[in-house]
Structure formats: structure tokens, C-alpha cells
Length: 142
Ligand code: 5GP
Image 1 (cartoon, rainbow, N blue to C red):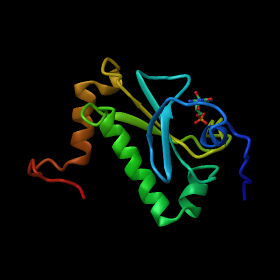
Image 2 (cartoon, rainbow, N blue to C red):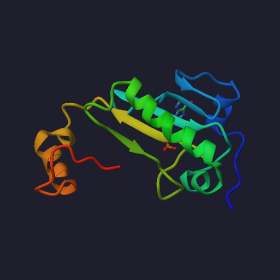
Image 3 (cartoon, rainbow, N blue to C red):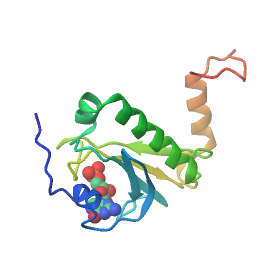
């Protein structure tokens, strides 16, 4: 089991020892802008609990924490206007995942409208892959 490092930078942000540019907060979750943004919008969403990684959080967090976390991810994406055009979510995990800060966090990256990843051809390709050809247009996944 990985031991949580209380001196990591996000623990310091949660304790108010260093500042952050906050976008959302509730009893279980804090979201703030990344200090070194890699996209026009780059926000980090973190649980307030001491969880090292996505695996640690997924296995150890309470149902209330899990629900609050993912609800906050969706709310922040909505509030920042990312849901219409789409955005990326990244959770780097451990050494091979390139995780630099050992407190679980999800990156939300958006606003790359000129990026070829967001081209209409690619979006059509994704739609074709997830929707059967004869599916009615109102068909929604639940
Ligand atoms: P990781 O590589 O662990 O997935 O991501 C850590 C992220 O934290 C990086 O994108 C990095 O830019 C960001 N970061 C590192 N130090 C600070 C800080 O002091 N404040 C904020 N807001 N972000 C930070």
C-alpha cells in the first residue's frame, strides 16, 4: 500500500498553506486552475481526502466521496463551458503514468477548438463507432 505524503503540493493547497486559483469547492472536492496550463482551459479536480492515486481513491473512498467527486468533475466542465465542444480528462497514475503530484487528481483540458483532435471528421468517426448505423437519433446511453 502506498503511504500518503502529507507534504505534497496539493495537500498544502488543501491546508491553505499555498494559494490556488479556485474554480469550485464543496465538502469533498476542490477544483482549481493548473499553474502550468497545457490547454486554454486546464483545471485540476481533487478530492479533499488523502488519496494517492486513482486506484487508491477508487478502492478506498466512500460512496459519498466518489459520487461527490464525479459530480464535481461534471459540474466544473459545465460551468467552464467545456461540455458543448468537448474536453479531455486525464488521471496520471504512478511512475509509469507520469504522476508528479501524489494526491489523486483529474485534469480537465479544453478550449482546443483548432486542434485536429477536435476536427469534425474525427468527431464523426467517434460517433460512427459508438452509435449503431440504424440507431434513432434520440438513442441515448444511460
Ligand atoms: P500530474 O503530472 O501529477 O498528473 O499533474 C500535476 C499537475 O499539477 C501538473 O499539470 C502541474 O502543472 C500542476 N501543478 C504543480 N504544482 C502546482 C501548484 O503549485 N499549483 C497548481 N495550481 N498546479 C500545480
